[in-house]
Amino acid sequence: MEEIKVFSGSEIEALAVRQKLEERGVEPIIRNGFESARLAGFGNSDASVELYVTNEDYEKIKDLVE
Image 1 (cartoon, rainbow, N blue to C red):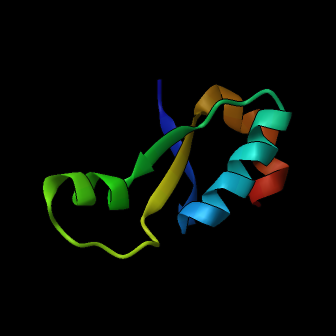
Image 2 (cartoon, helix red, strand yellow):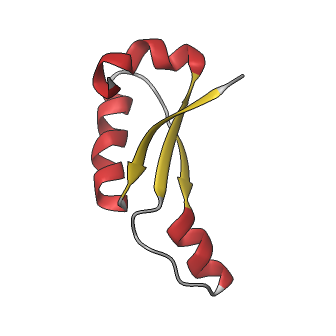
């Protein structure tokens, strides 16, 4: 199953995008580089949250990201 990145940005913006995806019945895969770096003891910019969806779910939301 292929994953497609649909968003990259701040955690606050990612929450808004996540809500829009969930309204369409799509549960995104969240990769939070900031939180991972914090837990490991490293600094990172806050613009490091990425949202991915499966290629099947992409068909449901492609009008939001194009």
